[in-house]
Image 1: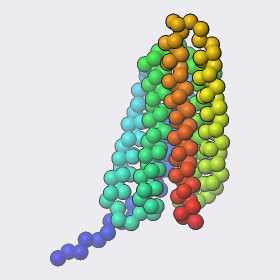
Image 2 (image 1 turned 45 degrees about the vertical axis):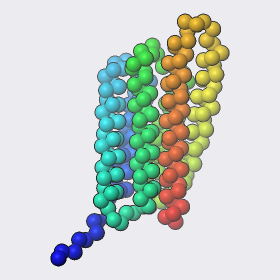
Image 3 (image 1 turned 135 degrees about the vertical axis):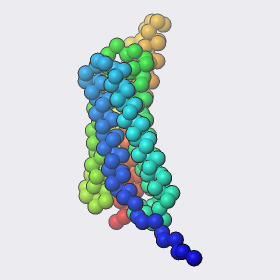
Image 4 (image 1 turned 60 degrees about the vertical axis):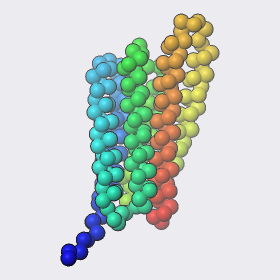
Length: 208
């Protein structure tokens, strides 16, 4: 009778770095839409492809998790981190989708501020994950994500309040609804970045 050996420890840190790099590519593609507002459908298709690649990476991580007996991190942390990164990218794709499908004439200054903040937050998440294996400056990166999420909340809430204040005519309600949904989706992306940072901080506590 053959003895079944435990599966080897998979390269989860490498997979997470690849996933974080894909997320970074996604927010950079959204920033390109906001900064150069043209060929929106073509740029949206690129973000859809990035989001699909994110789904593949998430599926790969979860599949490997099921088949690995000994993991470098706790199993629930691996699952939460993979799901969290996927959630951020879903929000980014959702914003691009609404910009395209709602036929938004031009991005607002508030959108630009929020996308810039999310870009900074994703960069911090990317750095935290890149340093996670050796725990290099991870807390610093995560703390900055928390600060950026707070800024996004303030900008998003004020932007929505201004929408209601400025909308005086019934015929303008349609535009209000469109912009409100985009602002809320951007706020959610910042929230999900903070969720990822919280998972990473929890991991570092267990590793130290």
